Image (cartoon, rainbow, N blue to C red; front, side):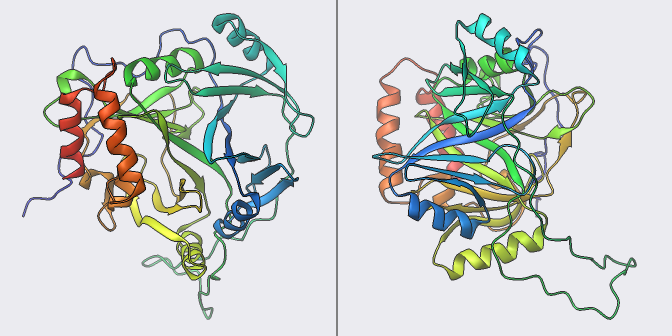
Length: 374
């Protein structure tokens, strides 16, 4: 029997003339994801899920909720009271305040102060898909919180744990930090190039539709460029699709035991797993995906790849089976084809996108449908 993963791994490189995965002279090079911003109508409900997921609360007022991990730094997620649930956009951390001025000059924006409880300054930009993108500097750093001590493991012949049982608690999977956000856009190439040119991000892996490689990639896993300092395999991932929308965001936990026991804790409280547990191919993360009460997809991950700037992009076909090295098959919920409100919204988006002038045409739709069936 042929291995379903043969040929899917991203060690394959680019062909002559394909996208280089980086800009020659970007305006700035951001250092990391700072936070993500949302609006939700019920902050009590959002806080209840957030604590069960493993966040700590950094700030709670009548109209605002800030969620943090154990690492020192800014909050991971800012949630404001709103009439409906929606994703407002990501914030990236600049190397310094001077980068904000360079970005403002290049994009025709302005450097403005953030609220006192966050500190620092921001340049608010708009990417080609219409999403607000903040680049921030000088924000207040929250002090580190106590994080669970790592378990002592017996691996093969290495057995440091003697006369001691392993008893990881079934408790919230303590979030350490924000890892990445995944976005969908109808203007993939324009939006990808905007992030590379303005924020200095570089591509770790490209995916393309089988039989359509000559038309270019339809997904990119994109990391920060900090030279010889390793960074996450992707801080931002972007896929071509029939609508401009948030797909999911991911938050690091300490290890597999924390991730798995935290998942049992969520299940015990009636929350819905979308897909997992498994290990990805692009990025190698062990993952577990959940739907929050507002329908947003969020991920626990651990053991992800770290790349420095020397690695060039990998290229691989996009398939549903190629999303994981091991684990259960990708679910209909994760793929967005589960019958219900989500799939109806996606069908309407497809009909609308095909009537507009963008990169999502009938040829691309056929490629996407093959992915869902693969």
